[in-house]
Amino acid sequence: MRELSKAVIRRKTLHLLTAIIPLSYIFLDRFIMVIFLIILGVSAVIIDFLRLECAPVKRFFYLHFGDLFWKREEHSLTGATMYAVSAFLSIYLFDKWIAIAVLLFLAFGDTAAHIIGVRWGITYLNGEKTVEGSAACLVICLVISILLPSPEILILVVGALVAALVELFPLGVDDNLTLPLISGVAMEIIMKQLTGL
Image (cartoon, rainbow, N blue to C red; front, side, top):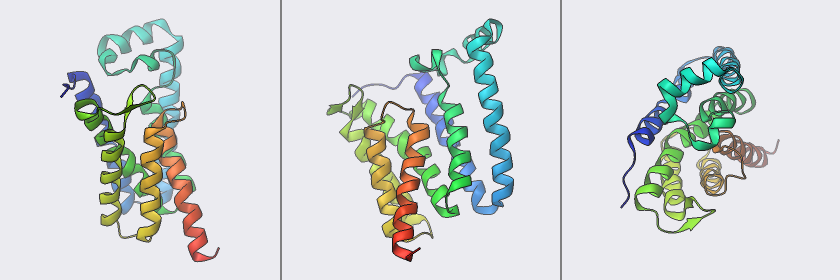
């Protein structure tokens, strides 16, 4: 069993807190959420651009938040920025409950995958992803699917399966972006097939 570093625990705690956005969407109007996420996403991109291009800003971020960055984020957009963009796109593009589902999959399923994969994972794929971590992601996503009132359970189960697969095979792109968007598209396709639209 491997230990999780304090930095990873902090980062994954923040990742869990992103569930506030889909949970808020249960009660808030889509227009309000879209406007909020446009502001959040544009702000995140601007801050990331300044971090990457402006030396004083970069020094500030690495002095105060350096332990929260993955190595790959030193020269690219952060996972937080990718999340803000994917949350906006999910809520803008998808049916309300599909958007809520995929963002909860990301908040809880992706976090479970990392924690289980690091601590108990033994079957590695792609160098860092583990079958055990992705299985944990699938289980959590299926539990979320059972708890949601809509759409139909078959649609949610397909989304959960796709989310776990994207987590396991991230396609070289940050899964904060790919996991909700690809699983959301899959659910939208199944929903349209089932409703005959």
